[in-house]
Image (cartoon, rainbow, N blue to C red; front, side, top):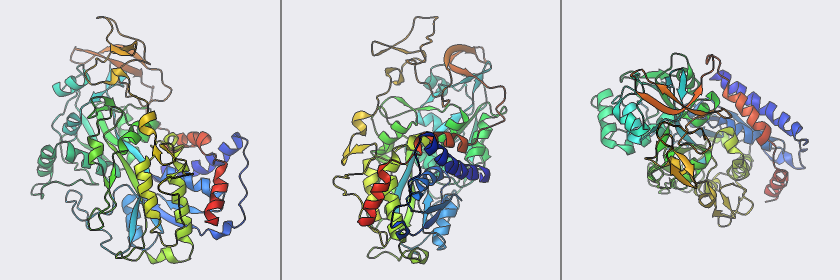
Length: 531
């Protein structure tokens, strides 16, 4: 992970310069008064770091210096508790000592004041490796309960009748290898939170099996249990992806942020959503789902300012991806009845001005190109929730008007009115649960070709869960080890999967298109200074 993080930071710096040069744009000179910004430093979530670094590069040319060390969510939270950073990034919130599975204790028990600010959003994706007759299946689709049974050891082979029912064809007899994280992980936290809501009884039963005597109800955890049939534990997102895509990874399925599947050019599962459609963790689908995310605003609650995703899991919009979530920026809070912020934040002065400006930028214009970096834009409700907390940062300056959000150039709304649900593309009729694998769209309706033939119309074909950008996908038929027919969309595997392109390289390419700071940024920052 250290190499990946270093490459990612290096790619951002190189990509920024190359992107500006390629577009014929000169780096804007620092405006007068740039020295009024005080540099700030943070640490934490490695998943959010690519976005945070990109945003930092965008504002740095205007005199605002924001440093970030991606040492992981748990380490970042500890850095904040230890008075070592001005802010931190974390996928889970501060732990409250209720995670028996992970054995984590209580963190920041009233030591320093803080707020949770949404920063990056994404979907927890299920990357998998199923090779049939030399080809990789790329259109796997599963119901939530089936996925849960795989990751609790109840379903152990790909030819299981439950999988056959979901997928629409029988896969070969191939042992399933669930790949989980051995380290503390935000992806694990979000997966287990979702699982505990999909089937509390199954989740509790699994917890009792792997952790006898555990107090119920079983909580979500950052540390997934490894002691269940065929499970393989890997340290870090990159190692999870490397195991699944390896030559010995046939039969494996793991969970991770969608960006790692995109980078690996490997498929992810299309998950049945409550609206009755197979859904993929695209930027649009995640943003649609998160319009139902809520922020706990009860100051007396242990979960104050934390995300409530219960309504995301049950959202019936056909575009919604149910395993959608967002990460936090944990920032100092100065409010009546709250503990004082960390002392490091108050010296030198002016940090509140810098941090509030940075947050206002990334919640608004910073979300415009976020999909190109592997994330999803934050929708209106989460942007408002984040902006509301910036006023509690000591020394913060006024941000956008929360009623109109005038000048907040977020792609999910206009002048404070949500446009995402009106404009987001609807799924293909062939993505409806119950449609055949070889479904095609004709005259706007889902149809099935005649028996014995399969469609080569990949544009209108049924649910393709391939994460391979720019790869030609064709429909074909393979024969499983059991002799049954497996009909689906497949792609030829490369001769060798041993060399994985780091996520940072893909990020650098995306940055060439996304990095150029909008011309209005310098003027916007000047207006912020005058405010």
